[in-house]
Image (cartoon, rainbow, N blue to C red; front, side):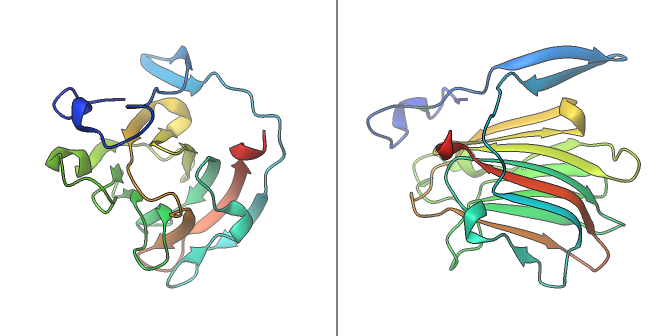
Length: 193
């Protein structure tokens, strides 16, 4: 998870950079699918089923905040653009926005702190994502320096470095209009392993 144009300038101590999760590879038809090759043995701290996303969005409870999380979500957008904001600090909504709208998934870290040294570090990454049975499937892994998103059962993956303050740990779910339904959402605090 690095860009050689800025790798030597990353403002981190005592390490420099981060490594992506190990992955299991398989084929779904002609599509390469990537899944985390990691076993998590702790129970989730949040386990929601069939929750409507209200106007203005919804903050996940404090138990679901942290700098090392796994968020698994199945969301039925019902025509709305949906966003998951992670590494938020309350005043600034998030360091990373994971958004799905009009068939496109984007991971935008332009609001992360500490990116003054490399302008491209804040660029958004986009990819087409198919809704299966009208639902968006996400498996999101967050740690101190990175966010990894597995969408559509791993057919689409995005891995990004994120530089932000240690206390930016909030999680918020929003939609651009009423109607989106969280079919399921689990959050596991990986620091409790």
